[in-house]
Image (tube, rainbow over all chains, first blue to last red; front, side):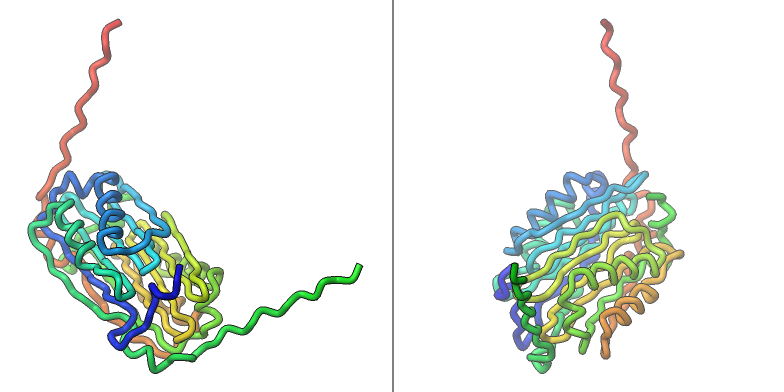
Length: 145
Length: 145
């Protein structure tokens, strides 16, 4: 993915929302299809590009899932029996908006209450610019026949 | 996965470590093999059970990846050129220890500095016990021939 998605500014590399969702609809939290579609749509809404995902359904109930995006990730772990979901939405780059992704999740899972902790990640790393420079790969000399 | 991995206690469902790793070895942060092996080994060290994973290498450099475990997840996004990695380790259940997983990551990526924010997730959800009860599935009556 293009480096533009991973730019480093004075405010760090991106925003990471740690979200507690309470009083969600348990039936929705227990559906792997609902949860998966909600996370994939949230990735699109936050203007991120999906590069991989995995979802898993627990027995007797609960779903865990992860969407890897070029701009970081969205994850969820649900406890339907408590109407609770542990969510995090991490996006990098000026073009993304994790709050728009979160809005989709809240709406789809019908969360009545949320607490949100917003963390700026990678703040101050601009002082480390040039900390590491990749070595050019050594050319393999063609063997003479 | 058994419900025992997803138990709810007074301290919540689990611990979520939000970790900033600085002054890591850039070459290691740029290797998808090193990063993948480190995360998978960290999952084992934290006594978690791997259920899925995905890793992605950026051009010109950087790696993103996650390991979904029965007890939640471990994720990483690296900026080798700054020697920086944004990590989070989330584990549920009394039998897990996210700090042991983090120790593996620190060692493998040779992080010289870290800041760690430890968040208890799902605190207070025990008050919602029985919030949702799954409906028994309706039996499909066999058609008479």
